[in-house]
Image (cartoon, rainbow, N blue to C red):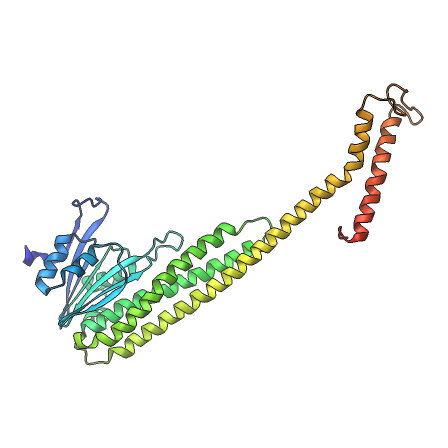
Length: 341
């Protein structure tokens, strides 16, 4: 069983509550100096067998099988254990909280454990397994475990930059919506704020763990090159992501305030128009109330309607005496500046 465990497999998981649609995949890639073992959607026994072979800490095994665990880096005598979080890159609006990547790294092995939703990592595994790009495969597994770990984190951070570019594109769309009076931007702004907040919660711990990894991995990777320089490049990319997210956050706050101001102005205009209509209708309402009462009024039914201008003389008279005060009120409001030209 243990011997077969380290051969390449692809089988559907039907145990422990896993759905048939979720695939359990275990790949072992042999390099010149080390082995890379990648586990997607593993069962606990899969990880425990690796723990027995490489003497992993039992608490780290629990961390691997927990879907929510804080980012961390634990150092031991012969290996290090890392937990990193990355957003899945299938779409910003469909993005869950994060995707957890657990890594065990020693001098002759690198173990990656994840749920298979980190597309760049899955593509790296396929590239090494299918051998359709020998140069890339040599770059990934031809040096050391530290070099491979750098490549994994680097490609995932680079895709974070792509995610940030998508956010910038969404910001441009929101800008158009904010200044379009026929559309409401509140929901789009709230959704994008949520995604920026998720990314910020993911990226800040990533920078901290990467800084710690740059200081601690050299002794385990046995690389002839100084890995600190490579990890410094990753930190530089993470800083760019953080800077872009902060700029996006500030820009979105500006759009939120602008949308609130424009919405308030639009509501004020609507209320002003409705108030004006109601105010100008007051004279007609008052006069209509008088003529609707059961009292004798000039031109009323009891006193006899006026017919000087035809059968509708009384109606014309009522309309005129209603329009004159409304017109006077309109001129007065305009003189006060309440109504713009």
